[in-house]
Length: 114
Image 1: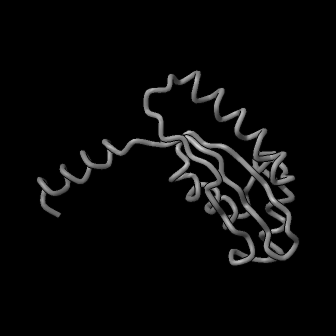
Image 2: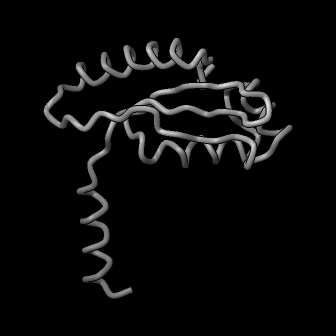
């Protein structure tokens, strides 16, 4: 890769704005659901799937479901994302906590973080 192309790619990557949001993981076989929140919801799937694939996820129940049913048996979904860039950091954190509680109750879900 040329230096100028590499610099452009790095610059474009740094300009990507992260969106906070709430995600869910559902075991297709059992119907169990787990919810979590993230300040960067669009890239959270990478972190979750990496830890599950390597058997190191913090939530033992979720990891057990993954081990029993495999990658195809656990579905990741973005439940809600915030697109308001004008919100303060404290406002985003408060919003994330409130929406996590809401979706945990609405989906009858457990915490993905445990």
